[in-house]
Length: 305
Image (cartoon, rainbow, N blue to C red; front, side):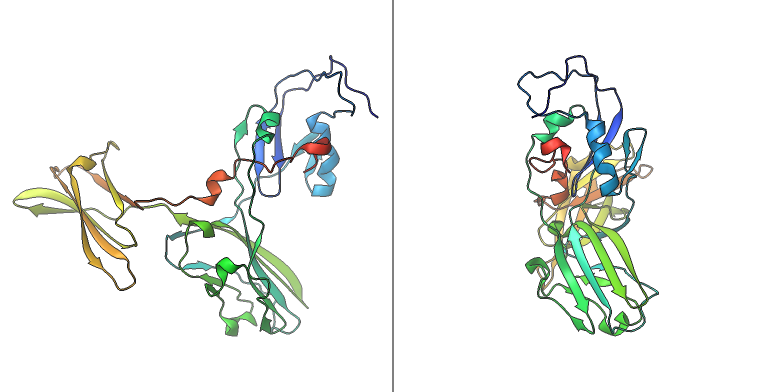
């Protein structure tokens, strides 16, 4: 049985970055006293916990501080319900014999500032496990472990695999497809990994065209590919909303169910600048908006991560 810390022990103020499997939290610790006569285990200062874990997790530890560089990945932004192209290419690949590669998806990591990391840890959210999107092994597709969400929705150019081109084509993306995609390959001449963030565009800003209607000046914008009639919002150059003077019209409904729409803003001035913003009428829940919580119990047992 360990001993509890005395009431005079203080945690000095510093900035610390904490890394969970798919969440990172940046917290500024305040000077605080650790005193609990009922404590039966020795409570380590947060910095010491991280120092103990730093070497095994690949983090850099200097002077007792935990340092984790912020990752930077290429972003691929695609309109909702369109097709996404995730590029991946390796020069060490020469043929497909004894070569394997896999694409998998995991949740996007975000950082936020919190005042009290311990209170923050009490929040609960269940993360999705990493999903196998596509895999290839020794001249053949290996899709036994492919996630159901990607069945018949992804493809690669098989004739280009032997040249090291492992680009993934993902069809009809939606918000649940957002995430960090990793392309990993290994072969007789080397191995490599590429990471990409796939983001679904929430909003479109099509060009605005000045026109006349009933001898009055109007501003128009057009857009296509919406599967529900979208919400159109108009702004002037001062970013003031002026949508009360706007109307929306469905110009065409295509065979795939998508709409081409037009919005007209009346009461405009020829010397003014106008902006047209279009988004889904019913916004789906975005997975990455909840990545501000750690898994339940993430800091139990002496700060295990």
